[in-house]
Length: 103
Image (cartoon, rainbow, N blue to C red; front, side):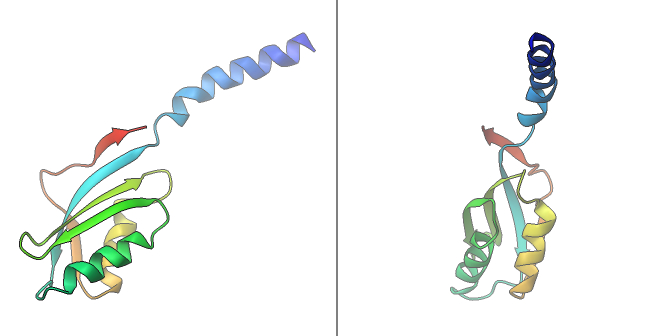
């Protein structure tokens, strides 16, 4: 029994750092094709349907979407594909790398 508990403890200590790699991230995406006041709403609504997205805001004025998401559940490629599915193109804004917000 004691040996089994020791192995469990060792496995936990080895795996614990891996669990902390996933977390909430924020990314700014350049969204091309938004031309009217309903376009940002379409982008936001589509992004919020993705499992792992906790916040999505799009702006017609800046042509950008800021998305907060759990990188253990989704990624920027999935975000861009969802934006494409509603008729726009999106790329991660140059110089706006993904940032870890918190975990």
